[in-house]
Length: 430
Ligand code: LRH
Ligand code: MN
Ligand code: MN
View 1 (cartoon, helix red, strand yellow):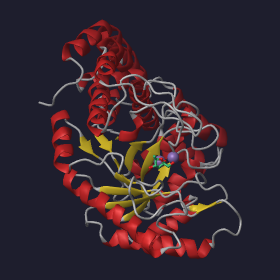
View 2 (cartoon, protein in one colour):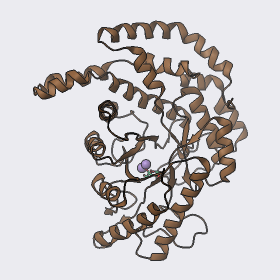
View 3 (tube, helix red, strand yellow):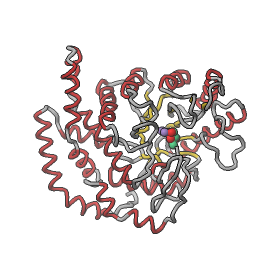
């Protein structure tokens, strides 16, 4: 039995208060869906098996380039972060894995694994960091890392990625995500072609060291920290990387890494079609890489992304198993509450996408009935699937209302008393 951070009787008492209402809402939704030819139990079963990983860096209060306003009881290091991740999983039962960032989370691998086991948590993709300098490192990444003009700096960045693979192997991870901030701030500063050649050669060295049952995810991002050009700036470049490296290399789509209004769901469809969709960093965005909570700004877009994923799942696309991870920064909310809600929003989009009448949709598409085709999507999107989400949580031992239960549990107050106030000040969080 895994160690609990939230007392079981708190969850039970809070669930008791809501059980009757949930039962009647679930029955009403079940009857409604049955009229549409959908079995609610099938949807609930699928939702219960859908998981999304928590980013270790998401449980601390984030910040901007301008300031960081710390919350109370902030995690002091990776072991506190894992405790906070466990709280999210205990309440949602949707987040049994954590994605680590090295060197931010560097610790003894045996201790990491033991802590994960004690909490019932596993580890999703490892993330390397060559976008900032670690204390004491020999060569600076100020002018780039895997694509740096200097061979020794590139070698150091490759070596760091190999170390991430080694840590990952020891804790049961099966993937490495590489995001680099490499790029330029002025026209002429960098030779686009040479920089990309150097990047590909460095990634080739990392790829060679990748175990056979691992995946290498490259993550594109349009701009920031480089403001004129970025080496891995879009999904086209990302696809070229994955294609050049080989079958274990795939593209990671961070929803916030595109220009506003980009048709991300179509990018997803393209990557699926060519076997190169590795996974996601879920979040939401209004202007850029805002790292806002998933579904907070454009829930319909999140649904449309899941519409593509469910389409692929139901078409039986070969080896279709994208990694689902969150990547958010929480500036004004309790990070645990934001991550609980985000996991819920992601499951909501999945559940709604499962309701799409795909046979009808295909018919409308063939007949060029644009209005009915789009209405078919809207009909699924408009359904309030909260009873399905709540019932999936309840059946798995989680909370019917996870945020309310978290507040009642007093977890934040308790850790605030144990963990000293962390430093405020400048940003630096990407
Ligand atoms: C870059 C990014 C990438 C990093 C994380 C901290 O903006 O999305 O995934 O690893 O933020
Ligand atoms: Mn990301
Ligand atoms: Mn980002």
